[in-house]
Image 1 (spheres, rainbow, N blue to C red):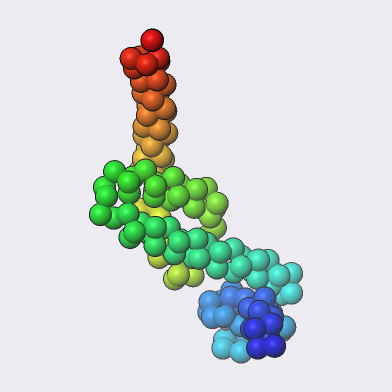
Image 2 (image 1 turned 90 degrees about the vertical axis):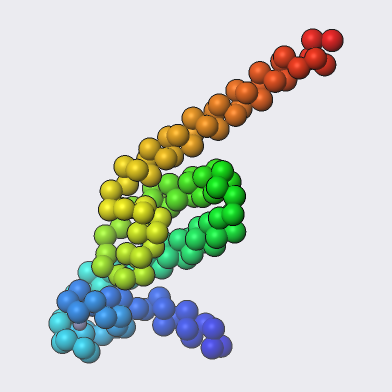
Amino acid sequence: MIRSLSINQQAGALECPNCKKTINTLAQQCPFCSTPIDPGAAEENTETLARVSDACIDADQVRQRESEVSNYPGLDFLVVTPMKFLWWVKYGALHTLNPDFVKAENDMVESDSPSLLIVRFVSWCLMVIGLVAFGIWCLLHLPWATA
Ligand SMILES: [Zn+2]
């Protein structure tokens, strides 16, 4: 009962376009700054807020994985780089001033420009291709393969 109630409350939450405070979708004006709320824009805003919330949850998972492998520099690159790149592909187009999202974006992309992340991901792809090619080469050239 309590759980379903809190989910309903979450689904009905939106960010005031003026003061950025979280308010109820049913409100016709913001209780904090009295800005009138347009129902159409409010619906879009609710969707954005849900995406922002997904983005923060995903970023938390990436950060957790990053802290798990932080003792192994190679593994960090191998595991975390593609996760960050996928995060950016999924949520990079979101534009919001939500502080949790801004922090998540800073942690994932690590700078305002994603070009460094793209370079890292391309080198990640090249490394994986190199490892696979090396594996195939080994299989073909090891003693038991020619015997
Ligand atoms: Zn407001």
